Image (cartoon, rainbow, N blue to C red; front, side):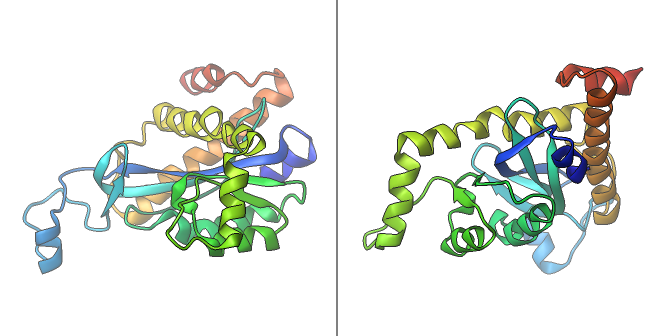
Length: 229
């Protein structure tokens, strides 16, 4: 689907965004004290799920959807992966960007939140032909190389690029969760949950493409209407 979006110029891949979202597991939570002891105190616990932390949601027992999206006039998922909630965003960056890079050489900037502030990821991005733009932490002995990243992020251009995050991938994630009702998840078990979530992303892509080919419409409300009709 991403290949179609790029080849048919449905999207402009110049700036893309990467982010993740925590999804609550179905049923009761598995407290860490019991988990560490290998004790399942009651039925209805998804024993594949794990605890993850979000600055906006706090601790969540469940899973995580990782997503790359386009920015601009058409906001659509371009790559997706699914993990337990305890997997850090920077751990999936290599795999996610490798998958996405197969489809385009026209990307110049990848924008993400502070969870991707990792020098290895900056270097990896440059090697793949684009720059990673995200909030950069300043340390006591910040290197010159890192100071350049801080300077660019704080510049007028850097802020203009980063501003696309709140207008693209953030609302897209919330819309997908709302349309397909995947938070909390309707099933237990890693394989079942991964299947539901990733198929939801694929279906969203298909519906956006269908709209483009038949209606020339990218209205988010149309997606929900098509599922209900």
